[in-house]
Length: 315
Figure 1 (cartoon, rainbow, N blue to C red):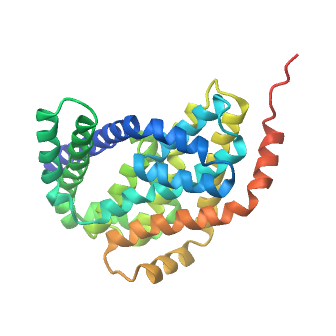
Figure 2 (figure 1 turned 180 degrees about the vertical axis):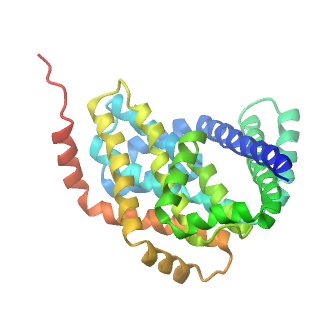
């Protein structure tokens, strides 16, 4: 049984990650210029920066891409460190749109956008039609990869060993966080990690507690991309990367400290018995609460990081 499950699951995962990167690249090529304009225009205060981060991430489908664009703008001195903090917080909310889409039971219809996108790519070679076709095709391929993974893990419901291993994640939030963080570091996609958690929940292989714990770990693992983007950048860009890491560390720590209360809130707000939707809603609730927790302390974090990472003294 394992011999047939592993190739299918890995194949679906490869399709999923590849589709995310290609879809992000297509949307980034289409929206990046606009995103830079809007980020530059609508980031004169933290609240507007927060909204810009939410919208840009929802449109581009990648919080890492938005935060990396933000770091580029900081290096180009087109954005202040203070206002970048709002964008980073907004990106963490905007990224939850993808988890809501994954929770919807639309993977079996993935062939429709794939087919439409392929037709557009065949008959239209000029932009923006070509971009629309590419985005549609990879959007469908993303959910087709999810469908392949979903079908591959169905036999695992009969595996006592696999269920025993997943039960340990349900029983230990810390173990779930480590699993989610390690998965994200290995596959370099927090969306894929959260998607796998939602998928396992949909198949009844993990409870909400295990799915939420894996999601918390994914939030930490996604910091690696943005920290790499700060290498050889300005001190202000480095401060932005450290702020992103600090925000995630603090919100995850508080989430673990009040984990049972977080679960109760998710069940209360969701009003749904579907495990996949509970995990997706938990992603939204956790990130919104984390942003609300940090927002009042932005001036404090700005002063602290300015002191810890000061500008270089020009001699």
